[in-house]
Image 1 (spheres, rainbow, N blue to C red):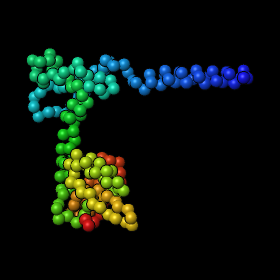
Image 2: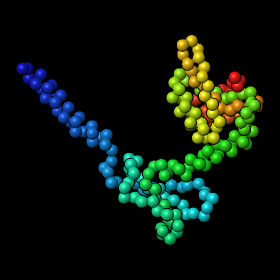
Image 3: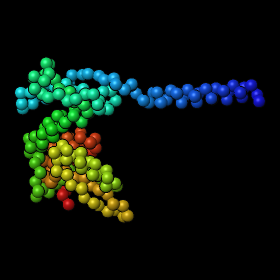
Image 4: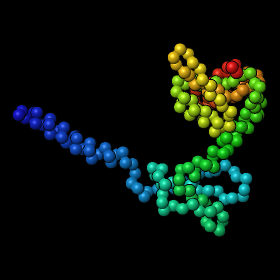
Amino acid sequence: MDIGMKERVIGAAVLVILGIIVIPWVLEGPAPGRSVTRNVPLPAAETTAAPAEIRMPLGGQPDASASPATNSPSSSTSGQVSASTPQAAKAPAAAPAKAQSIARQAAAGSAVNSNGKWMVQAGSYGSERNAIRLQRTLEKHGYHVEISRYSMGKRTYYRVRVGPYQDPAAARKVIPEINRIYGGKAKVVPNS
């Protein structure tokens, strides 16, 4: 066997061995048991409870050793609360976002009217699963969403529509917010 060929085979073998060792190490992320503490400001609550501190281990995995503290001043000298899962950290912010969206709709005079002649079409999908996903996203933000089927040739499309609204101006007022929520290009269409 040629010496150059042997060197190439040995080099390839060394690269494969390094790949086997290094790639899993890079993909694993930080070592378990390490965590980062960061103070997160929360919106003002209706109660007089102390501000909360959210503790999440690196990698977003629940820390079995962390236990949620109560929100009473006697349970913590600094008045801080620990949450052990990412869901606990997201829960307080979800409710105000939905309330703000509903308030924006009401302020814009865009309340849904069951007899309305106009809809905002957020999207049209060839997959019902994608249409349902968008419907759930918009409903979480306080919108009234309907999915309608439309067949063209042998294809069935699923139209995701918000509304109905009494006039096109009211429907146009919600388009920027709907586009912001899902990153699409909503448009006003007749309610048919």
